[in-house]
Length: 617
Image 1 (cartoon, rainbow, N blue to C red):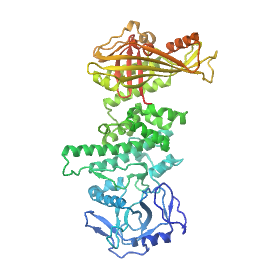
Image 2: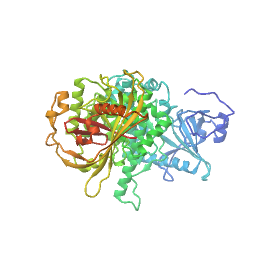
Image 3: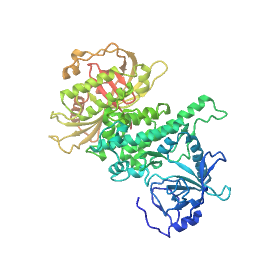
Image 4: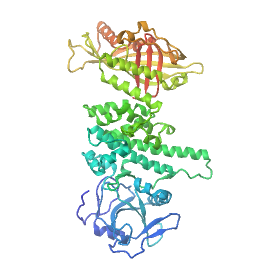
């Protein structure tokens, strides 16, 4: 950050935002009582009183206060920020650059004293504290002990920018690489052995470095019985000296190892889990902004948090964010490519950090072992949950490629069969719990959806096909209300036009279904899967399935225009040709063979498989 010349007409303002806060050298010193004179030997002492632990006491005579404050120093509205240099030649911090945090309100003073209390608890491992946290040196003593006296906290200075300001730079990637001075020795710390490369590889490598450092620092706090509770981009700094990520001032740190008099051991453990889970959710938000730059936009991030706060499963984040990411980067979003790598490992880690239930959120140590944060040179043994996630993510990405090649069809069908073999929710109660919701049809092994080489009249372009379930169970048996919604566009042109606009329409199918456990054996001899792709399929006897018994079916179709009866029948016929019969005629979808929080596989009477992903409106 370039220094600005002294501007004697400026005054002190609260540090309430990411902007320059400039101060006149003369006025600043007058307001704080500063004289740039060398303090006599022994001015700095150790404080042993008031339960503050071993901290340093300073006098304002020990500092030369600068006439500007870096943009990256984040403070609240009840704090004033100053940069200063220790000018006492006898002080161990002589010539060191520090930050003076002038705490104004009573609440701000409590945060400052809390930061000093935390210092004593973390002093047992000072090397870790100095490496991964902003170091608190001490406080400035006052002439009187009145409650109205200002409280000035003295802590370390770690560069002009917070992590948020780094990410807001247009050339943040090369600038941050240069600041960290990445070389082959450095990247070996994250399991890599190369530097440079495509932008996706470079950003993924840098994300691993920053996230691993952040997780090590947060884990250091958790192992000492502390939760930060204020982890966000503005409170994270990158030191250009030791190249480490520093978590912010611990003024609001919660000591979850302290057992209150009326609190049992079980209650204390639950409190500990909640506090750690809160920190991990904050780490998840930091990772989301670090990887997906679109979330740096406040409205986009607000929609992102609203999606989570409404109780939606974080495993559906890709389905939710995909339209936004593709709209802003039609040629390929770097963040999307990073998260899709290694079988969608990035989306898996993000969903674990942001899990709806605190008990399901990943810990710091397990996050450090996650494949997304481990380079190619580190061997990682994935869990079975991660293997299932990878199979589903790969099947989704292949289905999105929309390739007609026979080998691609066989690969997708093979991945679906592997998913069915690893079904984690074989019991009927799991299906009743997971099935309700809205599912989007991605792929059918028996029929392709969308444009083909045919030249039908009229031409119908399928947009989306959704399968929805709602729980209507009673005490006697599980009953689900099932509906299908298909949206399409009817084009009256004789040829497929470049501008595929036309008359929009929708098809709605509703019915009720009963779930029951049982086995299903497909008729492989008549299977469209076997006939189309050269392989016969049947459910292995050991594979549990959920049988669906469908009741009466109600079908309705609406169009934006008012077509004739003959035209409506032709449109309906074309929709039925493109849509798998299991969607149009629900009696053909006889069993479910795989389900988890984001993926669903249904098998038809002829053995064809329908692959769905959970859709969140």
